[in-house]
Image (cartoon, rainbow, N blue to C red; front, side, top):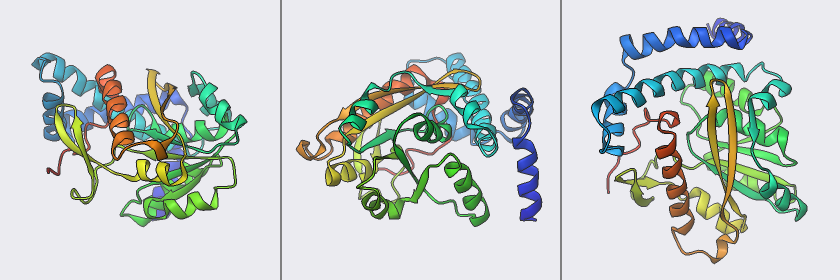
Length: 284
């Protein structure tokens, strides 16, 4: 069965982009109108995040999010067969001066990003458009077959990957190389008692300490990556420095800066953040 699933996904991944988006249009109709995938979670999140918006505005964002969600799913699948040239054409950095400065100083750093734009394509962009070896930190999927499959996609442009629990060990191994660690920093903590709690989109939300603690341990600068959807299938990455000397920061300072940066991005581009994630499942 796994062989046939893999073959089916491979066939889809080889479709041209115009066909990929035709398929996405069809799947959107199924997920939005028939399955109504996580509709209550998404609508509740949007209403609480944007209390100033009326019903029509919420519905517009919601519909736009579903279109974006299906696009990202198929774009991630497309990543398994797309060329470096195609990747670089469809996602690029607006300004690499921060990265180039670090490279000149032979300094490693941490990319902190959220589930915005196409975060899966971003790691390939980091790897192929900078001089850095990229370490992608991920949360393993419960299904071993799909976990291995997605891992292949995430490393096919030369990235290295680490499960969250092995991140420290992998970063130590790469300490003497020119390397950057990419962390999706808006994951919901499994243990709410071991989290940084801050105001996020009008509610208290727990955030993982990982980005901040790793930055402080290695004294690696932290760079926020904002992935903007310019048009369908095309993305731009904006970089901004969150912190240059993590060991000099107070507890929670880096995490709070990340929250504030992420919130600004979501408010500006509300349709392209992962609203289907039950981000506020846990409370203090």
